[in-house]
Length: 361
Image (cartoon, rainbow, N blue to C red; front, side, top):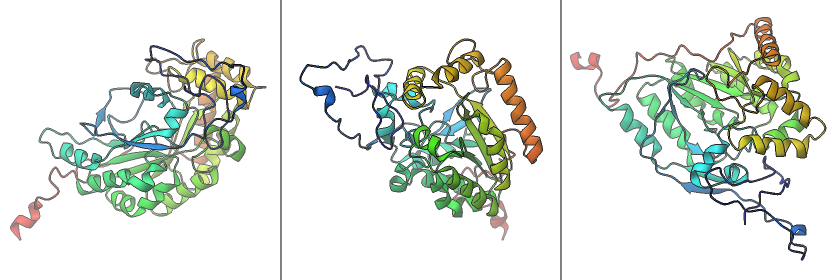
């Protein structure tokens, strides 16, 4: 039986429930059998890594809400456990729950770097920046063991292919050697997700992600090494972390962030219920205010999937948040936006082929 229709707080995990995915034909409800079964401590949810072998590495999109056309996802599911993660509902495609299953059933992808190399070498491939971290974090704990993200960076460096990275993991500094070489050719930009400076809020909101102080150190280290680094305030949650917006931008600017972006909380599919369960468990006194403000910015719903609205919302609250963001960016001299000016002209379809100049030596 799934442990999920009954709230429980498990140390180091984000979700307090694990509802079945939206494609499941049946749902199981936990009921007391009269023998005290609900009083038993549930078994600790351990992380399980599962191999997945996709047919392609690159995913393409045509959304006007994101500043890239191509992405590669090294891992499905994420052990960071961020309760707000919009990728949680994707676990339903695996017949798994978007709650604890998403945090504990992590799919890694053996051979992904080789797949990417083959696709970049294809005669019809057109070079455009590739994003790592569009769905789940490429520097989550599984990366220490599997090194899939590092393998992808090695392939991208060999092809002189531009890449953008979104992460809240301090493990990104392990790959400073590759990032520095990519940066020297204008081939990389890193976006560090910074949600709060409050360690207490962070422990419940994103339990296994790097601490706020560690993320600021990542920004500083990357900036000092000459790697372009921006900050992404995502998500901004009404009446929970939105009051920190100016402080977050100030701290990022002081540590060398060269650009900034923000997104408002979005709760697609099962995520609405998951977040509300979490909110009423951890912050019951402000739960209604959070949800009501979110509905005000989402046309009366918890999620507005329309292009142009889903990332920032609309209405008085959303407009005020956007105005505060723009004003704070101006105050700290940080450009507003997540775009990049990475170089696509250096692309090598076949890194092993001799360069033109070598032919005439």
